[in-house]
Image 1 (cartoon, one colour):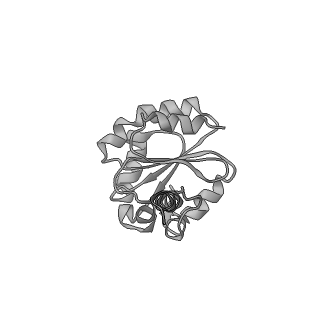
Image 2 (image 1 turned 90 degrees about the vertical axis):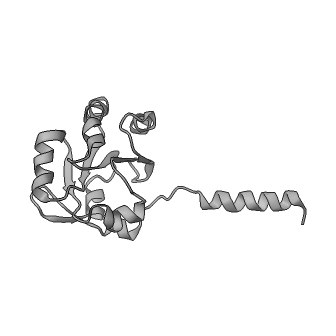
Image 3 (image 1 turned 60 degrees about the horizontal axis):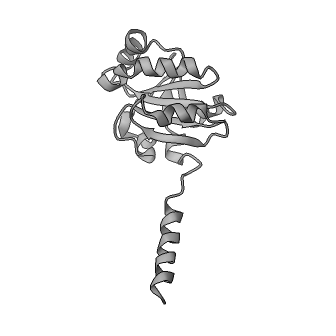
Length: 164
């Protein structure tokens, strides 16, 4: 086999392995969160609430300095994109800490959920979330336009929110 054929075969194989996933892994979909009234809800149920809408998810915590410093930019993104649903997934250590953080630091209109397993459960592990803040934007089809963004000021985040 010629070197060019081998090179083309290699490029083809690598390009197949880097395709963006279009669906969430079962581990993420089945992960249990808590609503503000402490009712359990799976990530799949959270996604179903926003079917057909563009959604920005932020994984955050009230003890995270980067999360708190990013709040003004998140508020700005929310003002500039009124049709986008903003969802905040907290990995705070306790429920009272999470609720206090919503009032004290975040004070952003949107839906807030608590992830008891933090970064140790199937949600974070299956999505490769190792640190916070973590932003992802889903388009109206429920497909990630962008994910694994760690700064609210990243211009790719604003672009994904404006995409038609």
